[in-house]
Length: 401
Image (tube, rainbow, N blue to C red; front, side, top):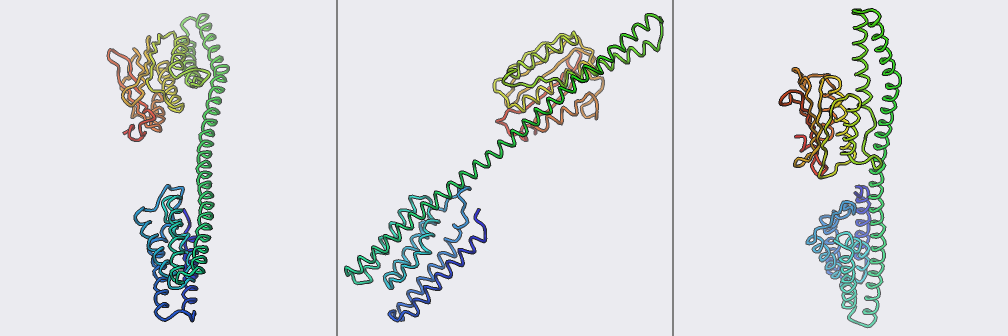
């Protein structure tokens, strides 16, 4: 938006020009008292049109796609042209008022064509008024139309040049904003990729160090129990090591890199691979049925994958299930992920409880994208986890509500 300082400078320029013309008309001995009154009235009218109407158009910014109201713009232009025409008829020196009037015509026009037409009309009116005021002599006709045509031509050329520069500036600003937004998205993608790489590295380290050490502890505890039958300490060591091993493997699984990409395939394929990996590692049957009618953005796909990973990790750690079903489908304006198991159930756990099963973190992750999480006891035993994520066409806050 054009600043207030720019408008102030316009006020100064218009005021100085009108005052200078008023002084010129007052000291011109060729003007009678009546003519001076008319000329001062014309200048006052131009000042009033500027102050109470045309001045507002100085603040219009092309970047806001805002156009002056057609009726008001035409009225102001007609008033300016009429006032200057009367003034030129009385005193040819009123042609100097074009310094103020022509820019105001451009700023109050709704389009370039509109401004050019107004300039042509101004040339015709001012030239005619000059010739009529000079008695329609050949000199007055030639001088009047020469001045008016040259002034209009200069106004059109300068107006087109300034308009082109302004349009170029607006386009450049829009391109800069788009570039900034793209850079922000790229930075976010790089951060996500870096975080995913770091999670995968940590998962590998856990698998190669802690998980392997726990496996060794389990094997040593089993050997100790064989050598010392009935040893409660050996049994406790084995059970504790097995629990820690399950936790470590679940942590590895929940941080494994399975995010969809052009190379790895679709979200549906990633869920199938996730289920196959879980089945290989736990010997728990996993049935995957994933189909989306409308594709999701990469960010939403990552959210769903992380929810699926966390859900399967919870089953691995707590459910004691023998079968798991994982489905992904479209329901109205949502992508719905449902994970069911036939394990021991919630056992009184509530999603509002802090800390348990990592579901609070899943709920918070979904809230960021306008999604929701529901955890209930499944019919016939086990747990049913339902994740709802809105499609990009739905406003996230509306979907969340």
